[in-house]
Amino acid sequence: MLEEVSISMDNILDEERNISYIEMGCNNIGLSCTIGKIKIWFGKQATVQSVRKVLECFSRVDSSFVHETEIICDYDQIPLYENNDYTLISYGRVEGGYKVIFNIQFSKQHALNYFIESIINDLKEGEMNKTIHWNGSMARIILIFNELKSMEGWNITKKEYREEE
Image 1 (cartoon, rainbow, N blue to C red):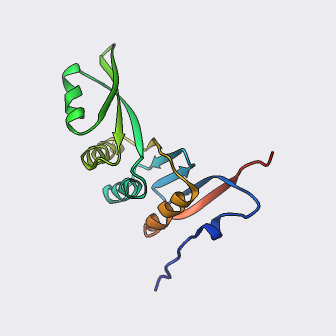
Image 2: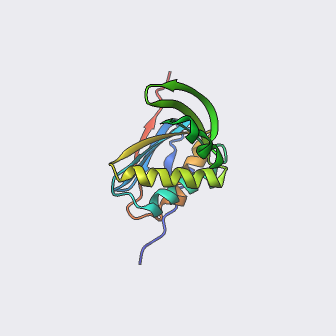
């Protein structure tokens, strides 16, 4: 029988030093977490369920999660993304179409679902990295860990402390 392990702030934090970031993950997904952004690595073998679990966890923990994405497409395709709740930031003509920048707000379920689908499709080509911006805290990073620890092999792999001045 597996023992449920809950990580608390006391287990992670050193009273004498502040953590600058925490890395966590499993075989096919890795997170590097700071209070301003989370870098995500998705391995080619990441499953639909694991990608969905990680990204939906983010939206539950903090509705301020936003991913900025850049897409090259035809002008006529821009409304397709807007209809999927992507927020248009800017666009400009480039060779091969239009370079379009969108924000994907994780608080919008339709946008999050469309983003998850795009990741799953891109993983067919190989592994990928994404950067998600948020207004987080160490307590919320611990909450993310505690929500994701049910995934097989999910562990904290590294803690880095801030240099004392």
